[in-house]
Image (tube, rainbow, N blue to C red):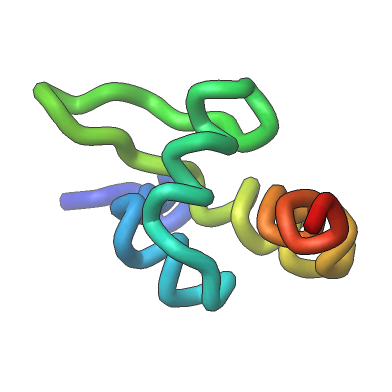
Length: 71
């Protein structure tokens, strides 16, 4: 039986959908260390708590706004 306090992990696609950014943006954030993740086989899993914390911080925390402002 799973522990209710066990951390929940999301796929890159789930994170991208929650944040309404592309999967590539999420991958860039994982590779740069801006977003913590663990590797499971060939894919990544991101702690849900980290995503919720980043989303509550506002858009300025997401890589997408940096690329938009750079145009």
